Image 1 (tube, helix red, strand yellow):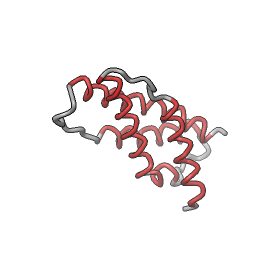
Image 2 (spheres, helix red, strand yellow):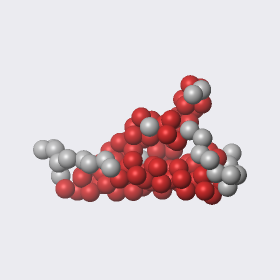
Image 3 (cartoon, one colour):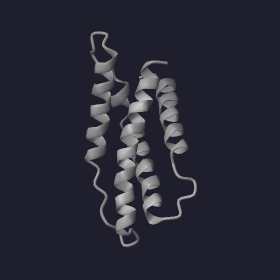
Length: 116
């Protein structure tokens, strides 16, 4: 796989995630959301080839979008964050809310990426 394409794609998704983080996260929940977005970004980067591999679509862009969205959602849904001593329940709830937000952001990302 073309390393340049991998780096560019990872950077674009990373930038989208960073723009959507709360820069002034003053609560455990908001800090958790930022953590969830960060985990999702790292997960995308670890699995990027899954999203760049060709999807046989017969020319149907919507089908490609749905397939990629389903792949991302499945990967994110398998992540389990265990309670840590320094994580409050609000922080954990925020992490899972960050995961949900990352799914929406990924949807925006693939629409932009596959319809430049």
